[in-house]
Length: 299
Image 1 (spheres, rainbow, N blue to C red):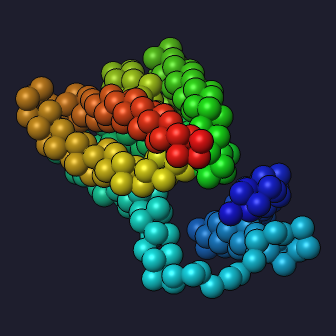
Image 2 (spheres, rainbow, N blue to C red):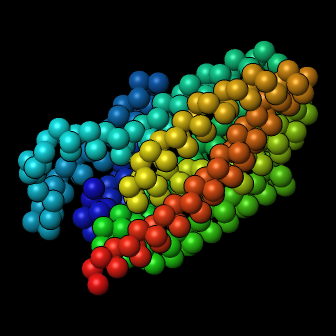
């Protein structure tokens, strides 16, 4: 909301302040203060509270243009709000469910060594997903305001720039895994010889999914911004729950082992990316058609 109010730098400062406190607190409370895991928990909680307080403080500043008002139709406003944010909520919940399924399948077909490597891969995946989400959050206020103003050519240009950005990021992230799988593992842990042997195949297969992941995460924000909330929700459910759950149980059987688990993630992102691009193409022509009809009615 604060980004939409024209203060993206304030949001960045709030997030940075919370992050810096968290990082410093992890070191200071765990080691000099000798508080162990409790210190780490306090640092995490403190960072979140700092962000929250700074965000709320903005709402009471004079430069804040947002005001609390009662909607014309309260029930309709609540329903619209919930439906708009539904896909983003599903994305977060689906990540938890998916992680549980992945852990079970990895232990079943690959054992503890594969699970150790996956822990590192999951850390990289979480970091990359946050970067992709950042692109989506950056375009949302711009796309939403221009959609409301009927400036569809600007939306199309924004779509081109943002989509090219996430595709470029995906190529870069994938190359990191393909070229430096051992270095990635060693950066996160003191790897045993068994882990080093298992790492290249796991990392190189899984990192292919990052080629397509950016498109899928970007689509959630893009379709929300142009009021295609149903499309956004469907794509999120397909990616987060339906397709990957099916493939995680089917591919290991068909491929005879743990490789099926890794390829399940790749094929999930690939399939959803193809569906996403088809939805973008369809939505583009719908918007163009609606815009022409609107211009004809005005004239």
